[in-house]
Image (tube, rainbow, N blue to C red; front, side, top):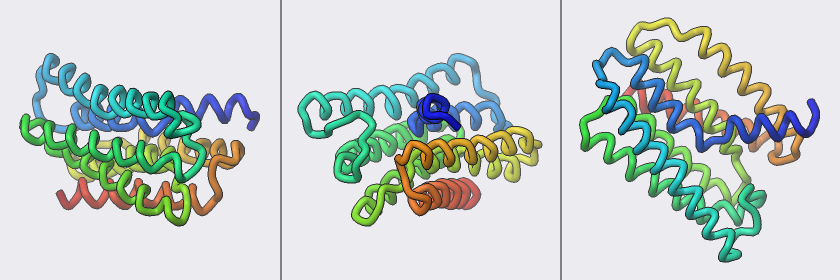
Length: 200
């Protein structure tokens, strides 16, 4: 693996893309009828609340010199952006629930909020991989949907597992995380999302 490939993979599989992908997966694979205009509005809402808004606030923090880099390489730099992210995710999850959209979408965003809070708490001791938390949580969502609705998502799940391996290797290659931080990110993503979706 070379550096360019590792960086490209880290950007393509950034944790911020998975709330949108997860919501889309729920809308596509759940048995509920969802009009196309509702789908578009929901995806726009999730994208704005979990990607655009946190990114804009992170950029503002960067311009104010609160954080040194948008990559947030240190645990200290991640604290405020993580707190902002958790608030944004919870707000969007609540809106999804109030609007009576598929419950699994609400549960997935709620689980994502919990993962961010867990990672925020763990920053005292380590810097858990948000990248692995994101893709592992998405993989767990697919697995939970497959079991819950009795649909065959195994090819997609298998692809995600392979991508988890590549992404973990990329983050280690870039020296962004230690093996412990990679495993912690992966486990929090899998355990929290699968538990919340199946028991929610």
